[in-house]
Amino acid sequence: MKQTCSVRFGSVCIAAAAAWLWCSESALGQALAEVVSGAKTTLFVTPSGSDSNNGQTIRTAYRTIQKAVNSVPRPGTVIVVAPGVYAETITFTSSTRKGNKALPMWIVGDVKGTATGWPAGEVVIDGGGSLAYGLLFNAGSHWGFGSLRFTGQTTANVMTDASGVSDIEFDSCIFDVTPQWGVYFANHGNLELRSNTFTRSAASGHATYLYQTSGSEMVVTGNRLSMTGGDYLSSGYRRGELMSGGTRSSSAGYAYGIIAMAAVPGSMTMTIQNNVVSDAYLGLYVYNFGNKQKASVVCSNNTVVGCYYALYLATDDKTTATITNNIAGDSYVSTYIQSKNAVLDGHLAYGMTYDPCGGRSWSGCSYVTVAKMGEVILNQPPSFADPSRGDFSLTGTVGIDAGTPTGAPATDVTGKRRPVDGDGDGVARVDVGAFESEPGERRKAVRIIQWREMGADEE
Picture (cartoon, rainbow, N blue to C red):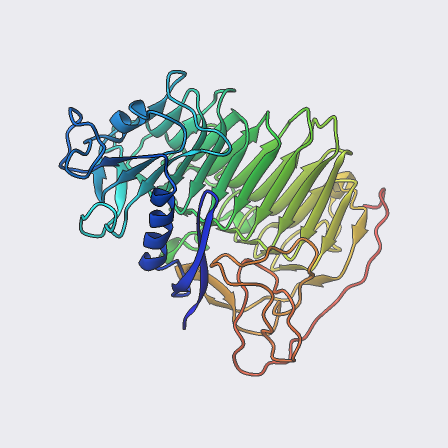
């Protein structure tokens, strides 16, 4: 089955035909070509290059990505990296040249080999089991990273705890999560994580820890963090058990999925959409406090299963929270919301022990202050196509065409346009969850609705 897929590097967004899971190599190649053609300067890195070269052509390519980063002459430079393995930690310091909003810097993997003439393959930043980090930010702004794989690091694939780091984007990268952290970003400015894959197992640590203290925007969309194969639903989190061992960092035994937090004095916008998470203590945790101006959170069309807390959202009184079209299921606590100005709608929860915002009582719910609840789909297990392989597209009737347009993204996790008439009734509506179903056999979707008005002080 073919479908439309969006590949995006920075401001470049192009559509191409692709299989259901990820974007085709031709789409990635076209996106890379667009980025390179718009670059003010292009530098090349290949496995056969030399750091004594000038990096300006394929024949005079650098050997290390670090050399290219240190040699960037101006904003708008794109570093194109040929397929191969690069055993290094790429470090950004106060002397590293910065991009700007109009002319960001990019490091992109030429996975198809079209820009470098190398055979197609992954571009791997390899820690070899001895290097602590793949990327280390001590400073830097307006840098993007596309189609890179980070593996073999011991502490974190990507690390920053520096207040000067801002406007960083990761797009279509793969993070083989270390025993401690995947992407650890603390005290940073604007950040975007788009269409990345976090490979995880029982030995993996926290996939993400994002704590923004400056800037105005955080975007986390289209990322896949679900475990696959025999590791899928193998943890005890969904039964209320904490894991011993495994995570070798702070909060050992409490593996995080997506932790998106902000404490920004100014106005802040957080967009958390189309993510897929399984087998974590906190599957999707969104926290926005400390705002002196109005702020907003949109948390929509995420699929989170097999967790201790599937969906946990907490905001201050200045924040408006739109929580729509999420699947939070097969978890110990399905949905926990601490927010006065929140709307929960198009919500599918199932297989939970506790669901404070779905009609089940729990002592901890005394802190939950949901201002408005819309149509809530409760306790109806959906049918996923092949979840142990990461395919959480809906194949039954539950959840198809059952969402609300409020807060819904324009595409699903694969880049398919929303909405699609998935139940064949002639009316296209948004599905719940990260995937939008294709029309198949004519299905009459059963919408099980619970109408419930909830006061601000109701438990």
